[in-house]
Length: 225
Image (cartoon, rainbow, N blue to C red):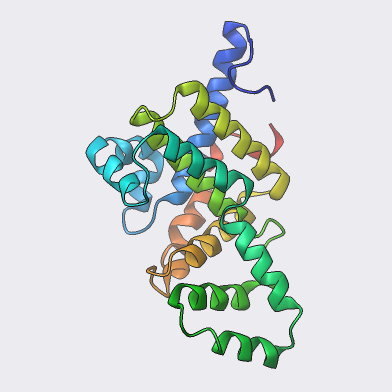
């Protein structure tokens, strides 16, 4: 796939844009959570209409303009939560069961670190081949949609980032099921404030994404196009 913004004729540009738009909507639909997920999944545009709310959401993460947003996206592309998670899993995998328990028990001064260690320990030997990479990829697409809406990113920059995410996703996974599993684990790993039953709570809406004809995941053959 060409880098978005490279010289293309008008017809090729329109075809590529339709594909990128469909891929963007598919990933954004995975990001949505219950109880509103099933309503908004086919209508993701509604979620990104309120500019003041979107700006405040970015501000909470220290992003107040184009430079900060691009730095944040670039860090997710090169390392992200998956880099930290993979390092943690490799460390835990080298320990015996008793040694892992002792190591985790000793991490009591940092609640976030303890939470992430527990998630990594629970799932490091039963996660998809792509790990939690899909969480980083979906978050990047969300940032791209918000950044474009707020004029922090040009359309060329937005689609170039999404193009990179598509390539990374296809190198990491082979199907939407594993992609969603990785996203759920990554979301739970990165966000300590999520409820303990986050994954089971969203199981129904994600199952419908995989099977419903109206699902944005079913609108394009992502893995073979």
